[in-house]
Image (cartoon, rainbow, N blue to C red):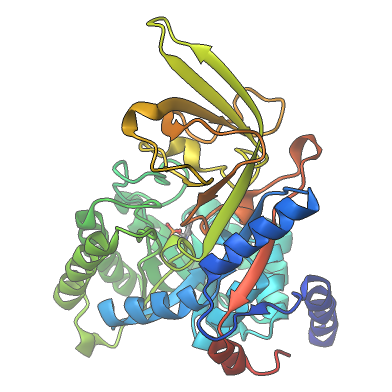
Length: 426
Ligand code: PLP
């Protein structure tokens, strides 16, 4: 019953409730907090890896998103970083949320977010998760197959459905087209089947692949959605929602790419879904919001030195964070990230004193390395620290305790202004 669901959600909220964030003093920055924690941990002799989440970054990312894409309402993709404070700040800023599972729905609804601000954007859902969504009064759900429609007709007949279409996303760092999205040619049939089952399809969605590099992918997908809208209307559906998915880049240096994408999207929206049509446009950005929120600090726990066949020295650093922790996705990056070294050198090490270094994680799996290629670093020692900025996306949320290594602590930090904006959290 609704009251039982409410009780369950309150239980979840209590369990997941975050401890108070660190309020940064006047003029203090999250970067200073990273250095302070390194100092404290080094003195205590427990040099555990950690992250600092600078929650004020979310405010500026939100502003940038709304300025660049004024017609698009962001529904933050919880999977990207489900830190409760990230969700609380975004909720206060007024974003919606994209959830992919019952667990994410529980987390978001448990924070007091109204079901109308949530889309269940996983096209292939477990029956029990669909039933949970129905019990909570959640209406927006995506689908991309006939089989899913049959489940939805049985377990959530009053849902408002969004048809996810396939995109050309092979240029994106993390393509999704092999797993999700209906072919354009199959959409007419799916819309007809939905109609026959008595289901309401209200819109179309797509995802151009995470960390997209090709703005044209958005243009093509928006054009395809326009065709789906025409098919939907023909089949008797009232089509009123366009969902642009995620894919927007999230790290420093990607500003120009995001601006270009926004220009392409705004032009395509004006062409295919002009404002007068009253179509609501949403997106599901994840890494755009969370990417630059977190900074990771990791410690060198072991080191090996060897010579390559040409007699040149190379080094291997073993770190207390790795592929099974916050670096899960970075093996797929074509260019490795160069960390900031925390060590006092008498002077800047000249390039000739940089060595090709392999960065390994701490577990016993040989696959556990941070990047597929070497990085150029100076000679470092056990106990030295490396700092990686832009670690907020798909890091903590993908961490595991494989081999008994703990998940890195995240220190949440925010300015007094942001803290007071949140008021007393419920
Ligand atoms: N929406 C869906 C359905 C996704 O699968 C993902 C990521 O895989 C996202 C949104 C977020 O994507 P991104 O972090 O690239 O913005």
